[in-house]
Length: 83
Image 1: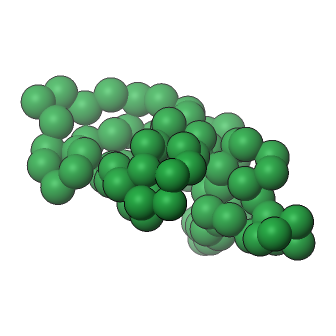
Image 2: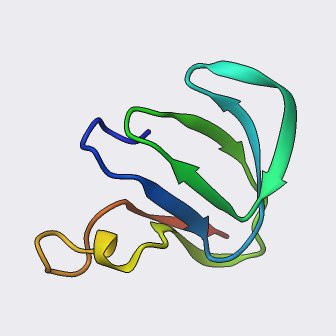
């Protein structure tokens, strides 16, 4: 979920595809596969993915969004451990 902070986030999961199944609290009529997801302020998406074994990072692909006031790491960042 993207908080209402006025920023758009372009999320990626280590370059691996994922399936978008819902948005803003409801299921989509048809799911779709993508490797990036542009999320506007206040939007929410439900995704499903199967990753190969390893550690993958779900992160914004807009460079300056990966910091907190210029300090790394920060921003929308989540580590997925597929073991």
